[in-house]
Length: 305
Length: 314
Image (tube, rainbow over all chains, first blue to last red; front, side, top):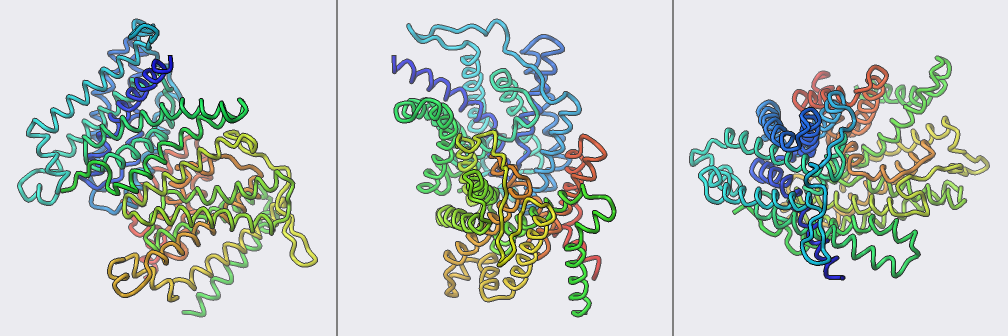
């Protein structure tokens, strides 16, 4: 029985971790290659979720919602990079923080103005039921689909980064931007494209997490910090680090939550345990990051050569 | 020139001190709470500017210390302790110890990693505040009483908005005076050297780690005092004072006003809160327009508003 529970939590951790990876992949490249702190990355996740919910609401099709949102949010990312963020690459971190914080304010209100403070988005009806994986372990089908999509995209990204010319250029940029430029790589154009892909991945995460969490204004703020934790643990600029970091963070969070709940229930009165458990579990992720940084100050897989 | 400056400063201080009565005479009492929030935010932003501007310590967790000061005061009041000096002492002790521990660990990292690790510690405290069910948990803590500050034969009750404002103003004035004295001092010069090149400063024999830690703790404690005053002003404290967006807001105030300028924190706090108030009276979507103003400042006013003003005057 206990092993079934643990397995279920591992699947939950994997599911959260893979979605975090989709957010962290774009963030780590922007941070690693362009040395740019983009606080507005969470806003792209929010925009993606809202666009998906809006299209799904109009057409009644979740799949169309996801597809439309990926395309539109990707294009929005390209426009944002070319129109504004590009001018910030050469500025110091503080200017980037101020500018992208301003972008959060602007995008939050723009979304509220366009779509309202929240939109309903539910998983496709066909995926609502549970699936029996093992005798005694039934798991929601929708969450399994999320895991599948996350794994597929992670594989696709890995192929893109490791096996294609585009990926080689990105890796060269992450390792040493000046040298890559000197070798004739047009880092500027490359990065508009990379940013667009990052935004599209945000849309996937927003659309798939939408039915589980909630599609509402401000949804990007808290998950943004988790994505930053992921890329710091993984090593800034490293896609592989982002994947490992994301799955670690996802598992630490979900497993820690259940383990701590049990431990607290054994020690404290129930009303204290139910209140303190989730809050203390939220701390675990940050504690984990502090420990990783103490031993590996540049993360698990530093990208800079 | 020097005399004119002193005169202008004295006049500004007099005006600021007389503001509650000026507002009352004009029938604008309502704006006293805004003025009060501005003064408290100015103290918090100035304290962050001390670490961020003069020490190069880009802390993304300053709200943690402001929030600790707020909670130290709020919890004491909830427990029936009303002595303002006890609140003050508790705020200094709690924020000082916390900053010493957080700083000692965080200062071993640098650059982006320092930003992230200070953020991580602040988030831990945020979730901790959410979990203390006995003091409101995630709903926050409403206070029935405020700090009673005994000064010789008099007792100042910070429940009176005018008293609260004047006390905060005195703290702000002392902060600015202290900052202006700090910059040309030995400690201040050493910090600038460390900020600009800490390897060279270390080679010159400065105990860089200890100096950075001292500055970090000083900034945190001052932030805690701002938090304590803020609780007295609001009569309410919730975990949101520790949220990362709050740290971001203080950072925005400093950058907006002017990094490493004595008046930067004040100008940034007054400008941001004033902008919110003006736009908020005009449209529900004030954050949208505030965002555009901030973007314009980044793109067109390098060095913040203080830098912009200084260039104009030259």
